[in-house]
Amino acid sequence: MDFLSYFQLSITEVSIIFLTVFIASIIRGFNGFGFSAVCISGFSFILPAIEIVPIILILEVLVSIFMIPYIWNKIDWKFVFQMLIGIIIGSPIGLFLLKFLSPDITHLSICLIIIFFSILLMKGYSNQKLNINPVRIFTGIVSGTINGLTTLGGMPVALLLLVSSIQPIIIRGSLAALFFLTDIYAFILSFFAGIVDLTTIYRAILLAIVLPLGVAIGNKFFIKSREETYRKFVFYFLIVISVFGITKVIANI
View 1 (cartoon, one colour):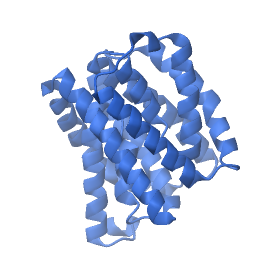
View 2: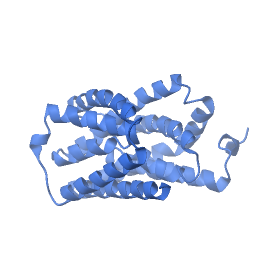
View 3: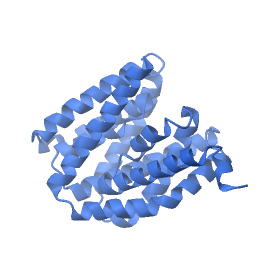
């Protein structure tokens, strides 16, 4: 079986997918999150939605593994586990609400809220008082609920970390560790649910070839960047992804 047969796509389409994964891994290596958002943006023009999620799920786990050497000693584990508790509580709520709420309208609303708060934070707003245990768990619940509804659950977590004036090196490490644990949990559930099959695993392994280099480049950019540069990049990234999400929703109406 040749290389392209695993994807059943043209060489141009496969090249675009590889390039998307490479760019996504650079961004993940730099800011600790955003891999899925970038991949979904690129994959959605080529692959059907039912094939996108399981591939990205495996790639998320793999890219997190490649990040471990860069973040291991720079993680706020208390924050990670508090958020994890909230996400475990919130995810079923999101899936339940999915039966009653319009995914497109919910997606649109969340994107607009993310843009508003990103702009607010860019103007210099911060509040260390928000970095307390109840707020962390509540944010985790909100994140899990949003993730169940729209797969945009990482954005509220990133905003909380940014508003609380935590050092970027801890923000990046904590985000990467949190999503690693949640992705493993999601992968196990998906595997036993039959969503992930061997073909999906083969595709993900082939695409993973570019992950180590992308993460290394992203980490290099992070080391050379100043705190202000990091925060601005994350804000702009959140806004761009949100605008793209709004555009997709409007296009589907």
